[in-house]
Structures are given as C-alpha cells and as structure tokens.
Amino acid sequence: MAPCHIRKYQESDRQRVLSLFSQGMEEHITTSYRHMLRQAPMLLFLLGGPLALLLVSGSWLLALLLNVALLVLLWLLTSSPWRKYVDKCLHTDLADISTTYLRGGGSCFWVAESGGQVAGMVGALPVENAPRGKQLQLLHLSVAREHRGEGVAKGLVRTVLQFARDQGYSEVVLETNSVQYAALALYLRLGFQKTDEHLSNVFFRLATTSSVSLTYRLPSAQEGDL
Image (cartoon, helix red, strand yellow):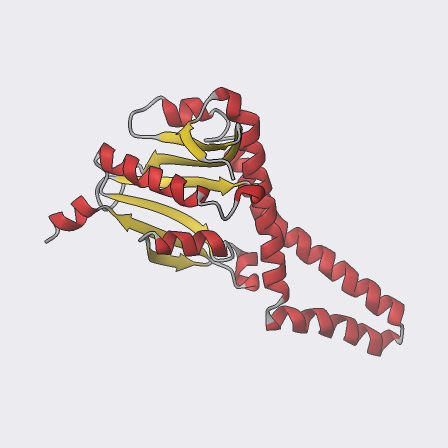
C-alpha cells in the first residue's frame, strides 16, 4: 500500500476530483435505493399494487410489468435529489475550485495522493453569518473505492480540523445523509457531535432517510466556555 500524501489542490487535479465527486454521489443513489426498498411501507406498496392489479385483471404479466415499472419509477425518484445536488455543485463551488477555495485565507481544498494518483478530496469554506461564532464548513469528502480502508478519509478530516485550529475557527460543521453510513461513523469517531437531523426532501421522507448536521467544537472554543 503506497503512503498517502495530502496536499493542496492544483488545477491538474480537476478532472480526477470531479470524477471522484460524481462517482461518490452515484454510490449514494444505490445505497439510498436499497435502503428504501427495505422499508415496510415501500414493500407493501410494491406488493400491494401488483397484487391488486392481478386480482382485478387476472393477468400475471400485467402485475409483473407494473412491478417493474414501479421499481424503475422509484429508482428515478431516488436518484433525482442526488443528481440535482451534483449538478448544483458542478455549477457553483466546484465550477472553479481554485477561485472558490484557494483565493482566500480562510478556505482551502485538499487532495490525498497515493501512487501518483488522487485518491481522495475534501474542501472547507467559512460559514457566512454563522450563528455561533466563526465556523468552517467541511465539504465534499470523498475517497476512491480502491483506497478505502487505508485511512485516507481520516487523514483528510484531520487536515481540515488542523486547518480550522490554525485559522482560529471555533467550530467545524458539516451536513451528511443518514445513508452515508461509513462517513457518519467516521465523523462520530473523530469527535463530531450530531446537532440536527431533518427530512429535507419529500421523497427522502418516504424513503426514511434524513440530512444529518454535525459539529466539531475545537478545544480552544470549548475551553473558552469553562
């Protein structure tokens, strides 16, 4: 296993970074879809509709076609919020990473390099009009599938935390989704605390997934409250 080197983003990293981001979001679509299909209301919906059609029409073929159509429809509904998020990011902060993250002193974007290839990424931007002092937002943590389990994500998060300390931030905040199991577990292990959980999308309400807000209070901020 090649050692991982974390450094600031360069323009030559752009295509690999955008590819990592898009691929990571695609994985979350699949995870969300599987999670949704395991929920009792969805199972009842998928079984009840075709069964009702079978009882009315007496046709197994129609019932099967309806079941397939419902599965396809649910896939499209599941993927829509994720794809909209990807499109939004590609047209906002990720449209020009250098300008967004590297022109100011209070923000940054890093990549983890292993074997001469970008294996992971993470960004950090100050929170405008932060309600509780000076906050830094962690964004777009993603690690290539072939480099997971090597401590890349942990190293990237710790880099953000150290940057926040050096820049005098009081808190590091982020938002993730409840189906991003590995990321959520990592943040909690590193000392982040869950501060909010809400259903941000109508379909997510049906799929019983939620947006989770997490906060890491830096030691200096915690000591200041004593």
